[in-house]
Image (cartoon, rainbow, N blue to C red; front, side, top):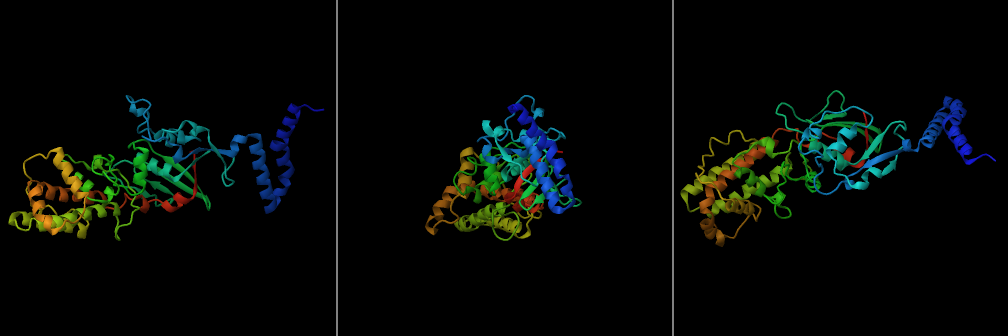
Amino acid sequence: MPSDQVLSSLSAYLAGVGLPIALAGLGLTDRGANLLNSASRWSLTTWRPSQGKCENRLWDQLEDGPLHNCTQPVLQDICHRRPHVRGSHCWESGLTMVLNHWKFAASSTFVAKPRPLPVQKAFLRVDFNVILAFIFMAARHDKNDYPVADRMQKRTFLLVGATLNIQQIADDVLVLHLEGSLVNNLTKDYAERLFKGYPPLRNDPKGNSVFNEHDEKRGGWIMALGLQTSFVEEDTFLPVYTDCVYYKDRRGHVFWRSMDRVRSIITDIWAPSFAGDPIATEHVKLTVRALEHIYKEETESGVSPFHDVPLPNITLSNHDQLKIITHFNGPPLIADSKQQQFRMDWEPLLQHVLVAAVKGSIRCIAYFKNSGRELEHILPIEKLRTADLYLRGC
């Protein structure tokens, strides 16, 4: 009786050599070609089972906390701004190096390779959130460049630091190729909020200007921007953002809903509360006019000449800044009976508030007035969100 070793060798021979030879003649017909392809795939995956599987790297396999942990904090060039290294597993020097805070078991999970993918090549199964997080973390600011879709290929998307190539090989299967290196580190929690239309700030505003649920929709973070004494756009905003919330019929919903809240509070609370003071009334009118100009013209150009509100030569305390931010996260109206007390409480901060309201709105509109930062206007978001995604090598 033949030994188990002999039977195993014979089975492998039939799968890898004998069966393809036997079916070669069937390739002359379409049906025969399909049978031959199926048989060839079966023989290859029988000979090498690993070729029939893809490793998983999915969002729920990432640990909470930072999405990237520097393995060499002193020598950050090891993981920051690394050049793309070509290869069949090039994601190992790209995506899985940028997002490297994986759960221990993540590297041992696999999924069957779908039939449209060539069995001889390696692929990495990913999901939409992993791709989106990579783009946020690899995109960089460049005043001479903006994110665009490649007009020649129409499937390569240049995201200023991150490059995404998309190939649709079946109705529900997309093959992707990514290039990029670490620029912005995010926590998993903050990334998830950014995916849902959170203010695209480089530093998470939670706990600084966003304290309670839905504060991201209110005006506190706009005022926090206006109160900054040393503002640099590249250090404040992320290079790209998701404009996925709906607010009126204009681009930049994430910003307008909060900028409008600031304008509403100035118009409906501050204007009537200071109506009895001629100088204060004039300053409030100038502020409302500046904010309305930004709203109507969708630009900061032309605001400075007529917003001549003097800023007191006094540095605000942290307590006063927090008081202002919290107020603009609060209700947009107060009762008429409370206006006099409001005026007494807020008169020392009036000019600081008016200047910060305009500065914060100017800084926002200057960032997003030119299209090209909204990922919804660049990428086929719905396809990426609903399809099965597989990363290929070079």
